[in-house]
Each structure stands twice: as C-alpha cells, then as structure tokens.
Image (cartoon, rainbow, N blue to C red; front, side, top):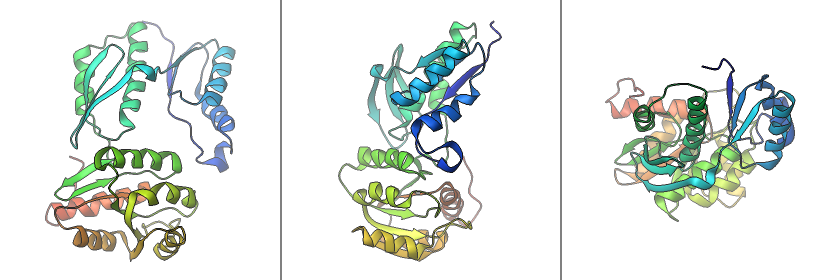
Length: 282
C-alpha cells in the first residue's frame, strides 16, 4: 500500500473572508495550503477559478488532482427519510441524507474512495453502500419530525443557504413555508435574506444565545424592508413555541441561518418531542 497522504477539498464559497481572503482565488489559495508533496487531492470542482489554483499547487507539489465528474451523477428518488442516486459505477445508492446538495457531497466521497482503492486500500462495495445508507449529519437539512414536518439546517452564508432553499424547493415545490431564522451579525445577512425571502411565507426571527447574534428585532426590520413578512419572537425557544402553535401538526417549517441556531433548535425541539427530556442525535 502506498504511503502518500490524501486530501479532500469541499466547495469554495465566499465565507470567512476576513481570514481567508475576499476572492474565490484567495480562498482557494488558502485552502490549497493542505496539499502536501506527492499526494492525491480530490476537489469538489464546479468552480473553474478555484480549480486552476488547486491544479497549480498540485503541479508544484508533484501531486495528482482528481476533479469530481458530476456529469455522471443522476438523482433518481427523494423522500423525507432518504434519497437515491447513481454516480459512475455506483448504481442506486440509497443515501441517508436528504438535502438536495448531499448527493454531490456523496459523489466527492465516492470519488475519494475509488482513489483509495487504486492505492491499495481494501474497501468493499457492500461497506460503501451500507455507509451511504447509514450516514447521519445533524443540522444539515435534518428532519426533526414529520407531523408537523420540521427541518433544521445550519446554513449560515449565501452558498449554504442557497443549498437549503434548493432542498426546500425539491420537497415542497413552489409552496412558501414558514422559516425560523437567527443569524450572526457578522455574516452576509442581506445576501442570505435575498435567497430566503422568496421561499418563506413568513420568517420568525429569534436571537440565538451568542454575543455575535443579530437582534431578532433588527433582523425582522431588515426582512420587512426587503419586502418579506416577519414576526420577531425573542429567544429560540419562544420562536419555536410560536411557530409550532401557528402551523399545528399538519404544517411544515424550516429553521436556518446559523449553526448556533441549529444547535439550540435541535436541543429544544427534540426535548419537546421527548416530553421534556433531553434530546439526542439518535
């Protein structure tokens, strides 16, 4: 078995710009810092400026660049429990994650697995299919309940929120649904709202328990100024209680805007489902 290391680089977006840079190329250059000498590098692709940066770094380090070929990715089924897709030699893969973007993430993993196999690692197809079926990823378009349908997603920048809203469209079509939202004030809140508002019937704003959080009143005012409908609710628990009262047991809703929000939503909502006991990731 070869002794070289391997790296996977996920999609590049404009986030953490104060640290990584304010262009795709600068962020890609910072990410490329993980690339070592004589290695295999799998990149998500779909961003030509970033790919050029990674290729240059691989050329300089005598490394092999593997760009995921999404032309072979076919989504075939999607449900609130799982989705099914085919990718390259892998047919009818049942994935335990339902976000519209998750089959792309899985394709990156499958590409990396095939690279490992060519390097001598023993990984059976049975274990690959089983792993895809059993995978869990809390707060990434995670269904917390079905009656009502309550979904939580940790999307906190335009790139992530765009994936969340694509998932909302996949499962609910053109129907606008209630959104519970809390954000960090140092994020691109305006850009996030431009993506969310067309998918929201009303946005319940809350203030996650973090000193960086934007006030629920300030967020609500910004939403209204952009033509959306909003209700300022206070704390996360207060927002959930108001939302669930309004939609009843037959409605549907999504909470998003921050990983801090997602953590609070999961803890409080799962506790309510368990009759006041602490929630779990199970």
